[in-house]
Length: 403
Image (tube, rainbow, N blue to C red; front, side, top):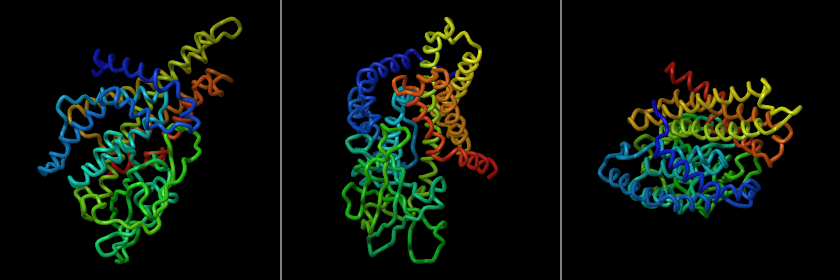
């Protein structure tokens, strides 16, 4: 049975010390939008040597790409458990940091390094992996919602050796500050093919590209430490060098790469949910032991005990999902689309329920920011929406199993 080792626990302790020293003192600034998250994340990368590790891994990935080995291979001596610890621990305090980090180094850099040519990897991929630049992954549109690919209306029209892109993207993590944007668009080749059935192309845009407008950060219910915005594209002209793979039919393709990203994003959300669950449970248990009502700690009342017991059931279930995912990653066993969607569906609902129960245990104190559980509830709530709503997870699970 998988469990955290002594080495893992040492990593947890070090990460928690960093969070206590560098993140907790700035929570109010992050919450109120006065501090974008990127300098804190860069300091974390420097402190733990993650920047150098990213460079080393990038060099190996680039060498495989140049030699024609496009299929990813398991990194020797890699430890997927150690990699997820930072995700879990950050989500105990400021889940939005993980959202911004994951989109920049995971979705944006990952897509470039998977679909791009060696030259494109060197041009954009490394700077994203090291956090020297901030990345955004732009697929969702105002009217497409969870039907991200089918409902996409942003188009790329051929014009000689170039493309002209028009449309808009919204709910884009890092959108207001992104230096590099991975953008999906439907090919408009004049053939009359219905919009839903057209090829999906993947481009890379730079901040300041003529015709590209990046909105100010949105005012949101939660995840305020992760800036979110809208992108507007009006006759954005790009060369073929900005089309990933420099072909309209890259290995994997735009639709396939997007689906692969959904798998990793949805499975990873279980680890993010675990962080929120663990912190809410810790706060609620400590509060219940110390809060007295009628001269007794409220922890002695059965209705409070029932909530705490339910929290532990959720924690165990989500932790088991995460541990199973770690074991499969270490063994090189893929996670199916249905499995990733099931992990996302259950863990997101569990995180929201645990956070809600924590607020209930705190009573009126749970409704004010000083006690932090209201922030964790607001941050958790979007887990049931982004990376596909609960409803779309049900559809994805059923379709994948019945395929």
